[in-house]
Image 1 (cartoon, rainbow, N blue to C red):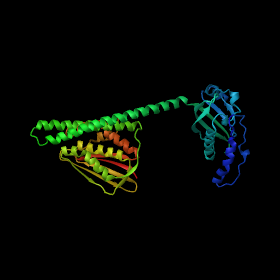
Image 2 (tube, helix red, strand yellow):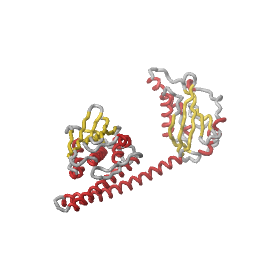
Image 3 (cartoon, helix red, strand yellow):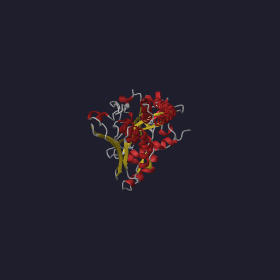
Image 4 (tube, rainbow, N blue to C red):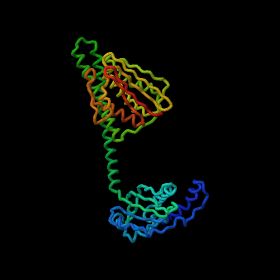
Length: 393
C-alpha cells in the first residue's frame, strides 16, 4: 500500500513561518489556495507531446495529464488523473519536492519556471529518472492556486552520464599510471644526463661536451613537454582539483630554483628573487609550483647567455601578485595577443635553439584561472619580458 502524503498539510505547517519571516503573524488560510482551473484547456497544445504534461492542485492531486503518461510510465490518463504525487514517488522524495515547492511559494517571482530532477515510480514500481519543469499559477492577488508542469524522461541521459563517469575514472587511472611510469623513467635519464654533463665539463673534447649538452637539453625539453601535456590533459578532464593550503611562498620559490638551476647554469644565467620571507599564500602549492616552473623555464629559454632573471612577489588586502622578469630577447606584440590561446599558440626556438610547444603557458593560465586569478605578460623586443599572475586573497 502506497503512503499517501498531503501536500497541502506541508504548506499549512510551514506557511505561518513564511508569513512571520515577512513581518506578518497572519495564520494560514486554506481557502486562499482554493481555485478553479476548468477554464484552462491544455489538450490542444500538449496531447501530441512526447513529454508528460500535467496539472496539479495544492493537495498534490493531479487534475490533468496528457496521453504521454502511458508511454513513459505505463499509466492510462484515467488512472493518473485523480491520483496523488505521493502515489508515484517515495516518501523521502515527496518531502524533497514539497520543500522545493515551498521555497517557490516564498519567492516574489512565483511565475518563474523551476527545474529539478527526480525519480518517479512506473506502473511496475520501477524508478524512472525524470527532469521536471513546473511553475505556480496564481490568482489576481498573487496567491498560488495551481501547479502546471512537464516531465521529461532522462533515463538515457543518466545512463550515459554514469557510463561517462565510469569511462573517465578508467581514463584518469590510465593517465595516472602512464604519468608515473614515464616521468619516473625520464627523471632517471635526466639524472644520468646531468651527471654526464658534469663529468665532461673539464674534458678537452669540445665535440663530446657539445653532444652531452645537446642530449641534456633534449631530455629536459621532452620531460617538460611530457609533464605539461599530462597535467594539461588531466586539467581539461577535471582530473585535477584545487587543493588549497597555506604555505610559505619563498620555500616554493627555492624549490623551483633548485629544479631549474642547472638549466640556468648551462647558459650562465643569474637567478634572483625579491620576496618577503614571511609571505604566506593560500593556494594549491603543486599548481603554483608548476606555474612558476613554467614561467622560469620559459624565461631561461629566451634569455641570452649571461642573462638575468628575477622573481618578485607581493601581497595586499585584495590579491597576491608574482612576477618573473628577464632581460632576454622579448616577445613581439602580435605573439603576445595569442600566447595564452591554445588554438593560436605556437612555440619559437630559444636563444640556444631550445625547442618547445607553448603548452606550459596554456597550462599555467588554466591553473591560475582555477584559483580565480589572472595571468598576463608585458614585453619589448630586445629588452626582455615580464610574466605575472595574481590570485585573490
